[in-house]
Length: 369
Image (cartoon, one colour):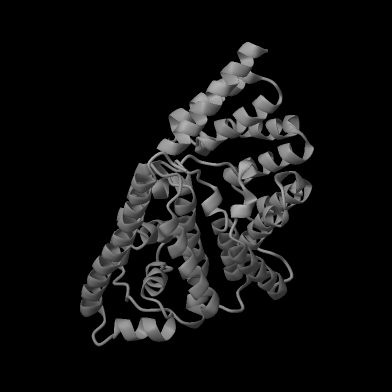
């Protein structure tokens, strides 16, 4: 129990309320802006009716509209996250692993492109909707990620964002019943959301995956996630990136204890993800899995190969992972330096406290050694 339960509950409730108010205000503002655009560009379109008939949710319909093919994929996602997702430019930059200035420029150019092309704001149908689906899935995924692990602030997680992303994903799964990656994304979010209660201690401090009390995991969300994963697997011969990541999450969900986790299978699944959707972050996650499956030395070799990667230069999880592997190898002094560097890079107060604590533990181990 926290030292002051009442204050802790009030603080949590306040943050949840602020998130809800932000989303509602953003949605109302965007409704007004799009309505003005429609009046100029398309006389007679009944936006509310179109969205209700075609998509079934206002915000999801607007996301489909903003993910217009006249924009590059990166610009679509950045613009939609900023304008409709309510994320800050800094939060979006973290998701893309690019400088904040790059995201700001993408958003400005995207708005200019839409204006110059006289884009008609309408809910797409048929093949055009399918063409925009990948961008919509990425938007929902990044909103969930920001909720699951907040970029900055005093809270490690923002459950309200996770709930909103899950809501949109579930609606989309009902709309696109035969799209395996939609069900794969829903499965991924359901299983990850099942851990939210266990990821934060009574005082708000982060609790890492291997240290979580698995009895606190939400079994209903896990069952829903596994069912969505089964649906995704039944719809296609080969699994896509979201379904593969959901299969990784399912490995954790099926393990009664951390020691029972099937790390060799997780490493193999990350190999498959890396082939379909290669990225430095995927490689870093693969290194963690390899380290757990085949020993910290094997994992450290993969992490060291990522150190020169420009996009990971300011990514705090690279030194955090490296510090963890070094610590397991008994190289406490090197591990301490890595944890301190990771703490200096993160903007999240709770995560910074965790990394500082691990650095102190490594220092104590070094003295004892």
